[in-house]
Length: 82
Image (cartoon, rainbow, N blue to C red):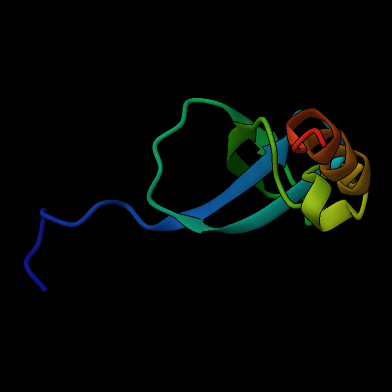
């Protein structure tokens, strides 16, 4: 590998701001904030708005739509009159 052309690949903590969810992984993202992790070490911190800890698809709290009611409403509105 050539020296000086690759970004700094290091451990980084990604923390979801909307819930108590954080994950330690490796990344090249630049950040000025830091956090002390469970192992006692300090790592760079990246705050997220949404993650698998708060996304409805992963939490199982999806909002289901009433498609049957919509179909009936459509058929009623656009049905041919006799």
